[in-house]
Length: 201
Image (tube, rainbow, N blue to C red; front, side, top):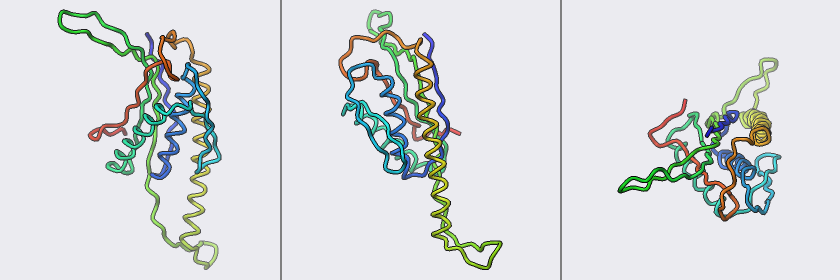
């Protein structure tokens, strides 16, 4: 079985944006791969003019929130580092049982790599305009920079959402037959974050 891999565009985020950005991306992927009965729930982002859809399943929301919280803890221990989160869908197969064991094998059929570059907010400073003798207030300067950066991030986040939609529409042949499972998500999935001793560059 082939495993399709989607490397999502890298996003440069500040610490306070991580939770909302990851929640949007992870829920969007899971919603598009939830082949069970879903109760769509629209969510408006607070930081960006973007709306996405969740499956409306509390277990999915809980699992995503737990992984985001773990990732934020990792980021706090590794500031200003690039990192990756992987969302994998798989099938469970029983391997040939031996005398004393019954082995279960995970066959991954799709993996999504979410690439984040978490940066710290630059320190505020005052600067002089080269064309005039007026001193620019550091608050205004950093507010303008932050506004430009946030607009850029919002555009990049939209690109990632379109990348997800294009991938799920173009790549369908690798999706295995739907197993007889209860719940919203037809296939088991896992979200992996960097370990505390691991660093992606």
